[in-house]
Length: 332
Image 1 (cartoon, rainbow, N blue to C red):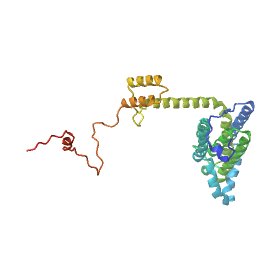
Image 2: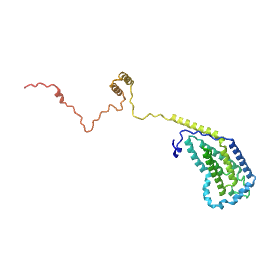
Image 3: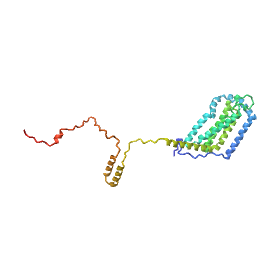
Image 4: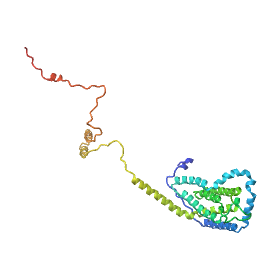
């Protein structure tokens, strides 16, 4: 068993058994309490209550003028709440986890949460139409139904959902606690940063925290749909692979030509082996017969080429007389 740190970068041999969270009574109670708080904030802004007065006091205080040395840092820090950069960063991490664990659940959970965020928060933004502090027209007004789109804060809700997904997908209680603390700190800082810069009212940020928390608490209701979607994607992948294998032409193996034995040689070889198993020359004779029936790989009609520098022996026509019997010599 490997104990070094690089062992955690290897791909697991088989998918782990992941238990998806369920909507327990505790989670359902938290969801109901957060939903009631969400509706109370919306009602307090609609009736121009003390919450709107607090919004104006914070806005007129102008925190970016009180602490200008923080402005340069917070301009970069607020990017942790923008949907594009944060979604790319978290998707890369969850994509690696999906590859390592042979499952698409992390990416599907992220996609589901972002879809819920766009639908719910976007609908409320466009429906209420509140203007931001920089575009306010009347001091003390709630600036509702004026064509704006900042209530609730999208930066804050996105920070809660995007970084909270890491805690939701954690596999151990210890990692879940640490990631929950990190995501809460990041989302709290992003929300207060938007108030410091002056792009959101304080009530916008509070409603954004509640909106993001509602999405995280509601995710267990979508776990069955996520599991069915993952199974369907894997089935489609397997069918595509089978179709690709079926349409691929079968290629003949490219290699040295193999000898072809005729039926007569095969039968003769079997008979020779059965008859003379103990004779040392039987195998040699069988091999000679097999080679006699082997398909030649070189054209036999090609004449042999004499080596360079050698001279062919010419037939000696006078040798014929040397071998013939000598004629008797007669005197003249």
